[in-house]
Length: 195
Image (cartoon, rainbow, N blue to C red; front, side, top):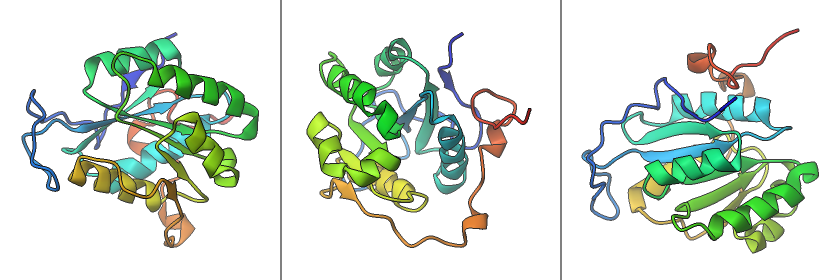
């Protein structure tokens, strides 16, 4: 079963121009949306659902598109159809060796991603290790505010922010953040299932 999908909803409108050209430091409305693909792993399914919901509400749909990839083959598909997407991982220490291998593999691709972002328990505890694997940024702690801010800065500047270990920003009341991707609730893997 293929898991990759351009996930419809608020953040998936592609109103871009095919050449994707824009002036550095400012958003060009004719530019293609920045593609962000989340890697769906065994232990991060609910985290990805929460991050998709968060980004649906926090990001401008004309500037960002979101997708989910469940395998390396699906990542290759994303790389083939998007100019320089952002690949995002959230993982625990149990998945760290596999993620490290995959990051090194991604860097060797003919069309590598523009940025590889990592968050979750392992990157929070060992951000420098994550950067040594080849990731561009390691998010420490809760990223409900820092991840959208980082993505906006990256899209605005058309280059990676200078800081690579991203510290958490102050959070609003935790109940104000979406628990999962409500706009995507009818799709797998974006909504929790109660059994």
